[in-house]
Image (cartoon, rainbow, N blue to C red):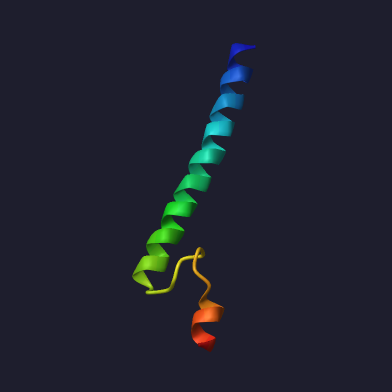
Length: 48
């Protein structure tokens, strides 16, 4: 029973760690590519 609980906790923490790593990598890629972040609206700035 203890191993089942530890596998469940490790799975949940792995999912959140993966999401955090993907988020950080997307932010780094957006900064290095010179693209605006998702908070700004690129469509509105290009039409002005």
